[in-house]
Length: 520
Image 1 (tube, one colour):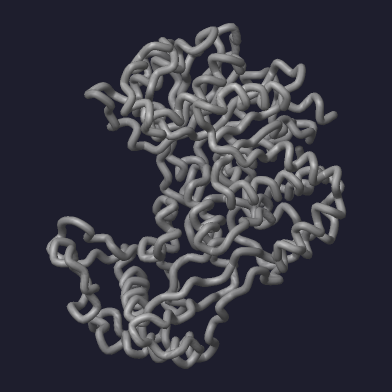
Image 2 (tube, rainbow, N blue to C red; image 1 turned 90 degrees about the horizontal axis):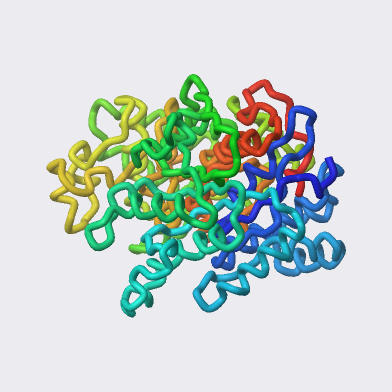
């Protein structure tokens, strides 16, 4: 299929590109790409660098990326990236045109509309996607709140307007809008935010019908707000991520959308990260700890055994012995490995030329937290759940003011959370960039929080997806993203609305690998 016949995507508030990755990876029954990203807009500098690099990767289509690209992601430096883009100026220029580093604002509204028009050219069949913050301020009537200066000055109340403005001004045939589940209970001036958003979207431009991806209705206007919630774990995603996702279809389009299919069984944490190289955390130098090293790390684990409850002693001791006999590495920016996860292997390992994984190294932890992680992971092995503070031995409780409340079963009781190997993970959020307490690895012999690559696997980013920035910035991007494998399923529904015939959007474990980069 010629690139010009692919359906263009405009992605606002793109983050690191999870929604766009899902759409751009979808093929037709004949193996042709169905969508291409015409423009993605993102304000965060590091997420934008990730978007731009991925846009560069897509330029090579099914012919495969040059070795220089793989050399860069294996050993990323600013000079290497500059040299890569200089070596392939045409592809770099198109990537820069596609990925726009821009903070949407009222002042730049006309510039944004013009940029979208330029990206679309003469094409009239296109899709708007994105996840705008939805502290709703209606643009539909163009008059609501116009004299409230304090409201107007608050950026978080105006970001949603930019998404709505594009709908009103350019009338995309279809839009897909994603938001957190909290929008269902949010209110502004005692009015339901989600009700206002739905009203705005339905009346925008030429008018839209807003559908649910998971619940059919003869009259979509009768859908309840909760009907728009998608439970990612029901659709083959190894994560209990619940998000509101709206499908808007312009009223002159007559095809009724289908619903997402259910995967049939949960996809577990262990089935998608269990093949990754074992790691240990580095030992933080805070609080007078010994300098980091394998022996200091093992000593910290041994000290944790002294506080271990009797029912966990055998599991924790075995974990420490396993660590002693083969201390895991700290990991590195690139690890050469041919291992494959047991679930969705063809999806994660789409680009064999990479020859390994990126973004798989560990963060540092204080010795006291290592002991808590040893307890938590051992507890989960024995009790098949993550402990709450009431389960902790007194010696392992953190010295925080709210620990007493947590220990009696009220607030902050789950301050430390193990990801259980045989279940989907809890929701990966941007909080993972702050500390690892909610994202403890299930293996007590590794005694650490999840790596960026492990979090990316739970978000279903393929292994060839490289995240720019330092580790904290990478975690933040991963936590803010839409799972690409879920986005691919959304794309299949959209493709059918637009008269295309997509392939099975959720590859099974034995599906053939995708052919090369998710092309533009």
